[in-house]
Amino acid sequence: MHITMAGKLGSGKSTIARLLNERHGFEIYSTGKIQRELARQFGVSTLEMNQMMSKDTKYDHMIDDEVTRISIDRADDKLLFDSRMAWHFAKNTFKVFFTIDPQIAALRVMKDPRGAEETYADVDDAREKLILRSMVENERFKEIYGTDNLNYANYDLIVDTSYETPDNICKLIYDEYEKFCSSPKDYGRKMYFSPKSLYPTEEADVIRAMKPNESACVSVVCMHNYNFIIDGHERVLSALVCNEPYVCAALNEGADKDKLSCALASMKALEEAGHFSYPSYPKI
Image (cartoon, rainbow, N blue to C red; front, side, top):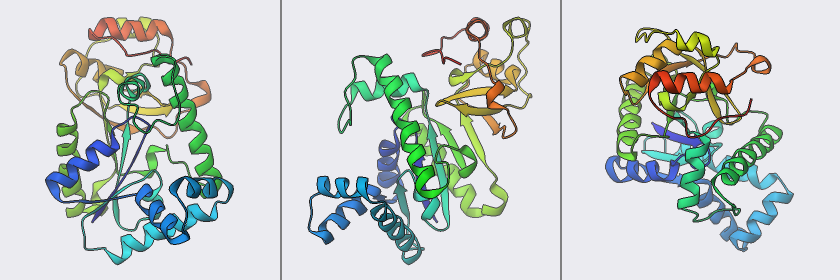
C-alpha cells in the first residue's frame, strides 16, 4: 500500500516524508522528481520545463499519467508520493493531508526560505502571501482537474502539524497507515487538530459560560486556510485545559461558509478560558 501526501504550504510534508523513508523504508516520489525526468527526456532544463508547463497543461497530465503508472507497476512496493495532486491519480493509496495554522506556516517559511518562490517583508506579509498562493494554486487545480485539493473530504487522514514534533507526527501517520492497511474499507476518515489552532464560531458570552466536556463531538470546516469549530467547543476547551496535543474531529460538510463568523471577542474568550494564545486572528 502506497502513501500520498499533500498539504498546505509550510506544513512540513518533506520533513515527514524523509522520516518515513528513514524509519519505515518508504521510497519517496515527488512531482519534482518526475518533472526532472520529463525534462531529461525532452532535453531541456527544469526551468525550461516549468515554463513549458505554465503554457500548456498537457505536461501536467504527463506527470499525472506517470504517477498512475508508477503506482500500478509498483503496487507491492512501499512508495510515498509527495505531491499535491498524487492522491487524485495514484491507485490504492493511503491519502494524507497536512494542515497548519497560517501564522505558524509563515514563521517556518521565514526561518527556512530555501526554494522560496517569493520574498516577504515580515511574518504577516508571508502569512497573507502564502494564503493567497495556496488559493491561486488550488484554483488552477480546480480548472485543470475539476477537483478541490484543499477539501479534507478527499483524504483518509488529516493531521495538524502546527505544534507537534516531526517525530510524533511520523509515528502517528505510520500507526494510522498500518490500521488503514489492515482494513481499508472500515477505516473511515480521521482528523487530528491541535486545539490551539481551532477557531471558535460561538458567541463570546456562550464561551465564557462554557464548561469543558471531554465527551463532546467536534466538527470543523476550513476556510481561508484556517480551521473553524462548528460543533464541540466544549471538547476543544477540555483539550486546551488538559493540554492535549490533538482533538479528533469530523468534517462538517453541511456548514454554510457564507454565514460563518469568528468574532475577535469570541477568540479572546476562548483564549482566556483555555489559558493560551492564538498565533494570529483570522479576519472573517
